[in-house]
Length: 278
Image (tube, rainbow, N blue to C red; front, side):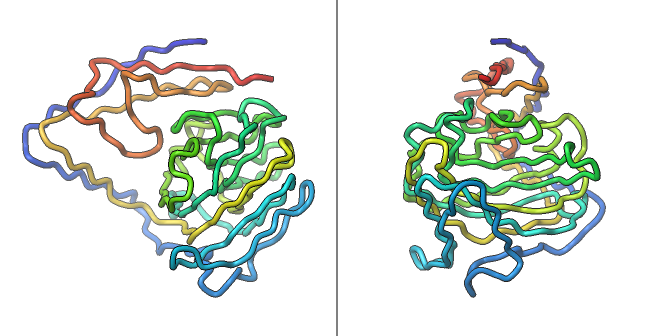
């Protein structure tokens, strides 16, 4: 393990609330990929890796969804786009899982299975430089952690949710694609070439079920922070090839503009780096 002690930018706040509004210049409309209200749209393409996961439109808890069922299979649905991350830097979606993968382990090839994942593909003219950011419902990886994929360093796994604590519940997500790409690869992202969803259990031989809700690319939005008599701070430290885990004294949810409550306000931030198992 490696530890990197980094400074926090601390801003005392004495007002009852503070609203910070910021925009990123170029504006665009939200782009709905699919909300599954009319079934599966024609833009999706099937990509089979090992056997076929069954994807079917469904209504779950009164909301349109795409249900995925995997039995020792791995296939994805891919929707091709051509988007500038400057005009659409954010991604939103909702999902729900029946449970995580019992033998799933993000650090190994044998455990590289996920009940649900949504990933963004950044293609390159040089195919070996094509990269992907995988937003996963992690089996063991702590929420907020970034980890190179067990098969390739060109894909980075981002643990948006973790474990079975929220299994059976619909969870709404939103991510900053530009910031996540920078954290994963240390540079600004190229054009976005596709969004994909996949539920897979081919490596562990287990079964998994998940539901996916509406997927949208969003334009730059306002950053709104509301808090009372507390502090705002930011912790960052990038070490390529390693996974960054937020330390207990730095309870910042990476990639989400979350603030700790006053009782957990740290005087410094620790970030622990753990090398991926081969």
